[in-house]
Length: 163
Image 1 (cartoon, rainbow, N blue to C red):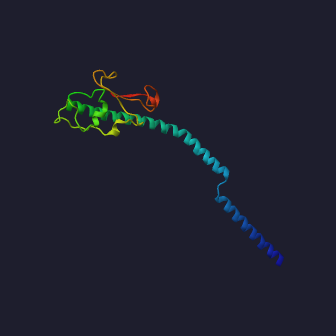
Image 2: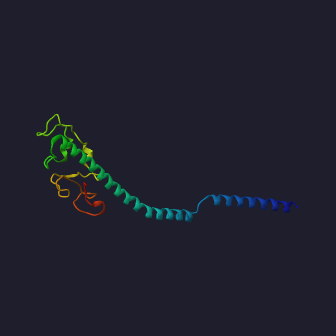
Image 3: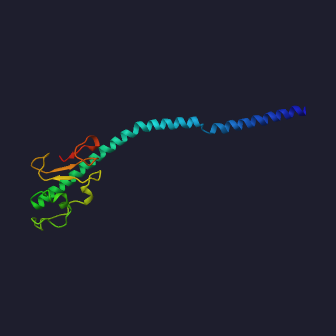
């Protein structure tokens, strides 16, 4: 009987150890489970990321157009103060000047009209100012050459003109 009692206690002991192992094994992830989760996250990122970056390009174009509207407003204030738009030799730099141009009256001058950072588009390229507009005849043209900084292009590289 003593032998029989030891066997029973021994079985309970080993069953307890097996239960502990099973509990420990259930708490951890297997390498296959981790790989499946990583694969699912990668696939989601592959579908979502291009849409996010496409939206980023559109946002930069929209901000560039808004900055162009600010420059147009500054050019109209310059026109009100000086009776003319800046010529091509003065360019947009005259809008940063504290001193009035030679042909303007000091009493009418209310410059500077812009900050230097406002003369750069969202791709850190300078805006192009054309006194005699080709796109808007009878007025001036403001142009941003887009992401590539060169004339022409498509998508994010497409040129942006004032309205």
